[in-house]
Amino acid sequence: MRALPILALALLTAGCEWVNPMMQQPKVKPYRKSVFYPDQIAMRAPPAGTLPAAAPAELATVTGRNADGTPLARIPVPLTPELLELGRKRYDVFCAVCHGVIGDGQGPVARNMSVRPPPSLVAIPQRPDGFFYTAITEGYGYMPSYRPWLGDEERWAVVAYVRALQLSQGTRIEQAPPDVRARLEKENR
Ligand code: HEC
View 1 (cartoon, rainbow, N blue to C red):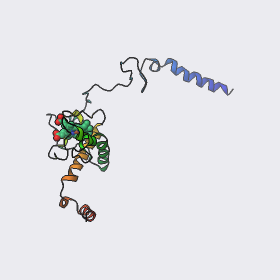
View 2 (view 1 turned 90 degrees about the vertical axis):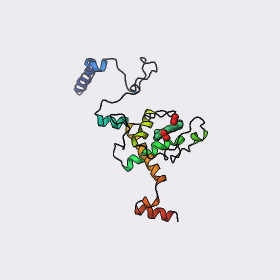
View 3 (view 1 turned 45 degrees about the vertical axis):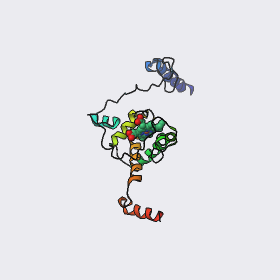
View 4 (view 1 turned 135 degrees about the vertical axis):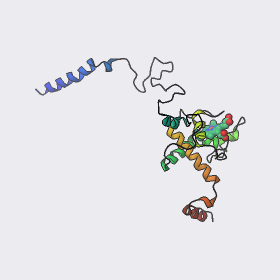
């Protein structure tokens, strides 16, 4: 008699497969191959330049531009130590090879590039935050867009870290908070 409920259960679950049209219709499964697209990749990326349907403020966070097209003056996401740490990691992976580990434009690629060497990023602190963000997002002259590799938050994180690099090299010791100043003075004595 114990077989009966099991049999009933088997029939019931099997029944779902038979009757559920959602299970039966043609579809793609994540990470599966597709014969439909020439590149045979089932999971599609949105076409280049696709933007989310969002409110203007949200859109500015994604594009780095105000409604009139000018770059945002300030980073629109909360500045946290975590964001800076994320920015350091991404910068070291994606930017340092050209713009240098400290942003001075002295990366290994720069030393071997004859066309237009990657410029120093610490030499342009007067540019708005959105300038750095749009350069990463859209590409800049010879430099490609890094949007396919870096998410919106990651790109703002990189901008925050570039700001930290600028401060680390263009700040006088008198401007540092007292505790930091005391430590630096002790270290350099
Ligand atoms: C393959 C080398 C390379 C990499 C990697 C690279 N860049 Fe660049 N970047 C360049 C070059 C070359 C230029 C100048 C392009 C031109 O003027 O045509 C440039 C220009 C820029 C500018 C404009 C600077 C100015 O003075 O006008 C910014 C900002 C910038 N890059 C930021 C970044 C950031 C941030 C990253 C990492 C996400 C990055 N770049 C990765 C090569 C690179």
